[in-house]
Length: 110
Image (cartoon, rainbow, N blue to C red; front, side, top):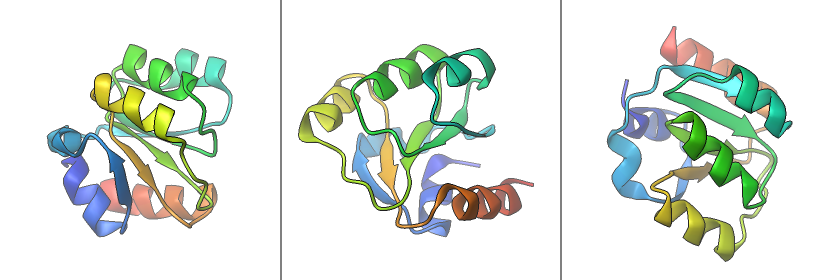
């Protein structure tokens, strides 16, 4: 499934690198601990997190993730969105908590 299909199905607000919505999604990983994401996420995963700092872009790029979903309606600083554009990393936001978006994403991808 394409990231665009996921974003549309889950009403995610795309904040950066809309051209990246053609990426294939292989699954999802939910964590707020960067070292955990580095150790356990898989290429093509969507990363669900509440973190909004610059390092999320670096980790997602390094792991080849399809995109990042920021939960709980958290705001992402312009500096982070600019870096995401540079790194070609889609960042999307939702008002939903991590548990809810993960469940909906699981049903969508299963």
